[in-house]
Image (cartoon, rainbow over all chains, first blue to last red; front, side, top):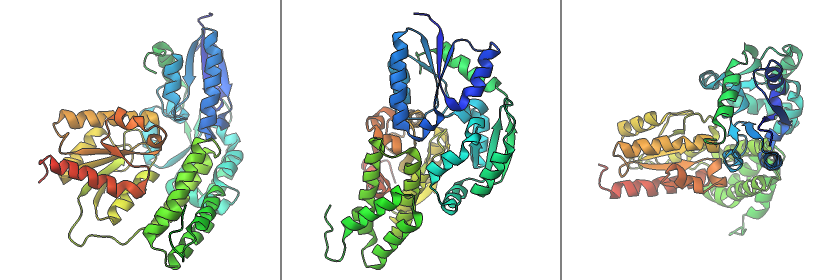
Length: 196
Length: 230
């Protein structure tokens, strides 16, 4: 048993968590799973279960950096004594609960940096190959695309322009730091598996 | 599944609808429903024999990991379209059946199921007060008391947000309204995890919007039977 913290995280937060560790603000090992697993929650759940099973044998302190991304996420945390960030998704972890709430009321479609690079791949699998149908579905309940700029990579303006054209939604940038996410990560690590 | 009628090959229509949903073909799904309705199949039967089996089958495929979240989302949208096409005429010949307060619990922003339930309740004769997404427990109870609703319907998509419903359960009990106001709960997570209904303190649930009127009517009767509703 090493007693080290293993951060089991969605790949959508790879840049952010890597930076925090490099700056010495979190310690331990970072393990990332493909962010596209989010599109198939049962597969995400079984993958996480396998990974947690493997990691538990090593005796490390486990922290799940996942929102409520599959039906059994809370059970995974409980069953493996893992900590888990208190957020319903990665965007809420980055933004904090109140700002996330405000953006949802604005009917914002939130775009994370890693996701922005893959928007075509995600949208094609999510909304089908017909752009008109995709646009109709997106604009039905969303009013604006909001790119969450964590400051670690240049704003992917070309991709956002293309996504805006595809979706029919305007877009803007919301500059956010990593402090809110850091607080959530450290709180989850400190809390451990007691109240996952 | 039986077609239960010479004029309706409901099983074939169900298969076609399921195929359209799986392929995210919104227009084709609309065509199937419209042709069934224009062919004289009653809307209630289109729902029970064509649409509902497709929804149930999709749910099974979802639980069996054979469709993705995205496909499920699109299929849900198509199901909502189809339900809207099948809505019967409003029944309010003698005033509303009752008042129903509905909303998504605090931190939950998945409105599709709630809106569909509201539509079905409305057309079944209920006066529906829809509080929208991300509704705190206090607002639910305050509104229910204000409009004299005996049923509050709370929706949640995922487990963490569903657990917020406990706050409403506790508030209702603490304020002495347990007999007077019944708590209906629903949302995808309750279909995956039926035990969650009891865990959050729900008085009942329904797998989908088709069963909402029956559920709310049953719960209202329970509240009326307690003698606290005027």
